[in-house]
Length: 359
Image 1: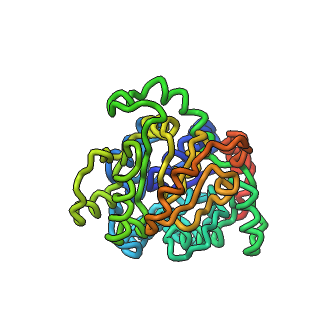
Image 2: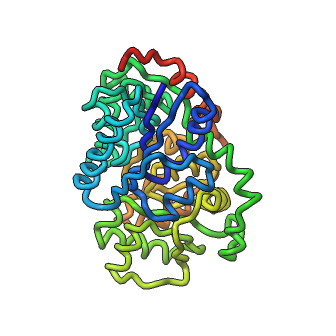
Image 3: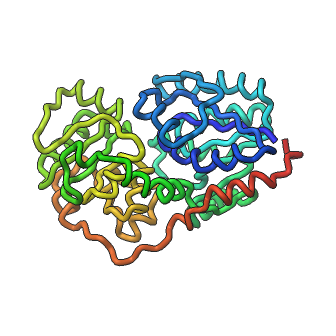
């Protein structure tokens, strides 16, 4: 059995490390890893392969940056070549990036079954590129691995029920697996001279926040007014936007380079509160029991809001910031929203028993 796994961005590397270790140990499965090059910064790409012991990619497409259409098209051209060369039984994609969309489109056009890990998520905001990517991928997929009951329900409402498996969230596997290692190996708090629970952690990378100068300016201004230091690892897109807008440095904000996974786990777990527009970091915040304020009007992880571990905040409304921060409390309730930490094992068993006559 041969499968092509398509990866291209930080959260996909994290998810893939848990499943790939099982696939690589199975002599009956030949996993071909393709790195699209969507994230090409060393701190957001190469370091994850080494730190998480993810096998080196068999192909690196070097897609790089560009507009959504240009980037996705470049990936599709190269992925079509890879699929035609390797002739896999299955193409596996993760999440909701342009790499996800390119992989699912290229495979389906060549009549190769697609398996989607993290299927069924919906923010219901089609201005988000990620929403388009995940909806299209789900409707092209033959096998859909849903992380939660809410995701299963979303798929059912769209008429997708065949081939749907509720497995739990594979990112939870990674958090549980690497958390202890992170505390033993990472010295990030010492390096940044921080005390546990005495700082805020912020990540901002979505185009809706970075590409509108006034919106990004509001976010930075709000961070400057918070009562504790804000540690702000800069995504390359955010860094360019801040430089373009000439946003000056401020003693309350510590701008740093993107962090590796182990450092990020420590920073997330020890922050007083996390501010983010990232779907993955909203989840990691919940998994690490750290309150989160999401800098968006909606989220694909509505269950974390329902359980009061996550608060939605419109970044454009400065008047709401102070109230949102003041209202943050650690809830008493902590239900297992994302499974039991064995999603990779469930996905592996399902993949291993697929009837590949389907291809």
